[in-house]
Image (cartoon, rainbow, N blue to C red; front, side, top):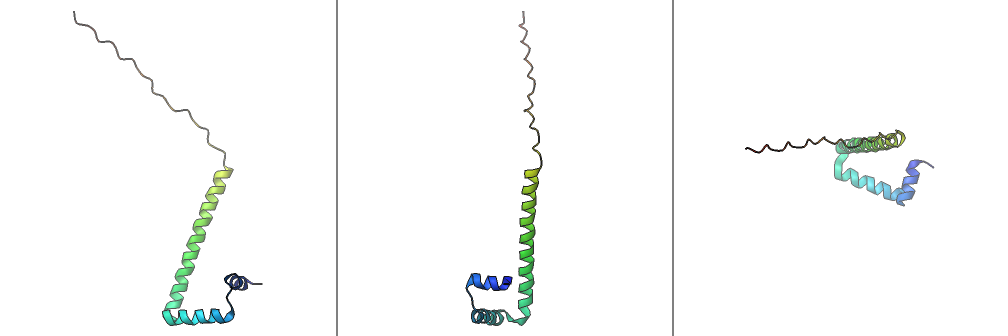
Length: 88
């Protein structure tokens, strides 16, 4: 069973419904605009897949890399103010 058949089963669409949808799309957008729409849709799907793959790689990398040793917060040495000399 091909992916197309599985998609049609998932959407519960028959051949007639798919044909009607294609005719409506052709009437709405025209034959010149459909390739542009398909190209834009393909680019959008590719960018989405690239983004999800990038996020997945980042998560896997952060899981597999050892944690960085935490450093204690640096404290600044406080100097005691010199007492003011009393004028005599």
